[in-house]
Length: 247
Image 1 (cartoon, rainbow, N blue to C red):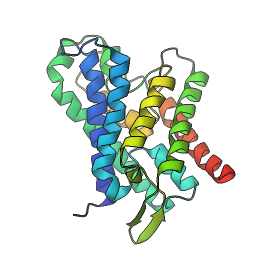
Image 2 (cartoon, rainbow, N blue to C red):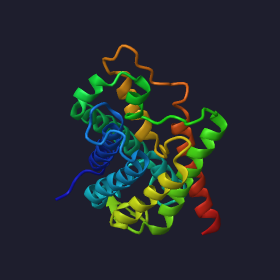
Image 3 (cartoon, rainbow, N blue to C red):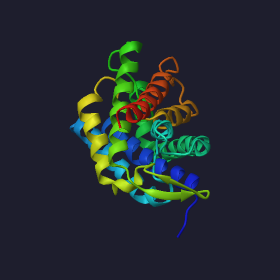
Image 4 (cartoon, rainbow, N blue to C red):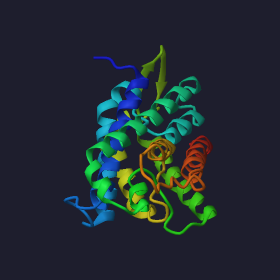
């Protein structure tokens, strides 16, 4: 079986958001089975497992970046072709949008019962515990730097995409588990300030989908939205440069 790498990125990011947004919905919305149950441990664990599922399904076809910051960082480190970057990013954003939408459909009765818009928005996108744009940016930068720099040392595939063999370029060679553990520990250790988007597609795509919801008092908080986009991009690119400098 062979799947187009762009489709693979869409599918992998779809599963990432379906399961990742799903756990936030499960512990946050009204009258769910898991409402209020050990939220942070459950959320960080499930996001790590969601990465495992997305990578396991699509790694052999695209390298399973599932994250524009990973794609950018690997390109900066000469581990991925720049010509493939735009298509990967578009596929990741669309996959994130679709994953969050299906999650919404799954929990739609509970969304209807949940009046607090901050809670509803949190199931789609991230937000700061303390709004301080400089520190929020640094938190997203640092978390993504750790993610992408770690990936540089544990990703080892050779996959031909559009006739080009790219060495050491994605998460697929990790056999899914190590990168899931990396995301898990980043969330547990560094995620408390901003909810650790560490992935522009993971935040922007679902935030845009939230904007389309038929809710009267919705507030997508676009004033903050640049933080989980530019912070991860900066962290991923810096990790790529650091890899070139030190390795």
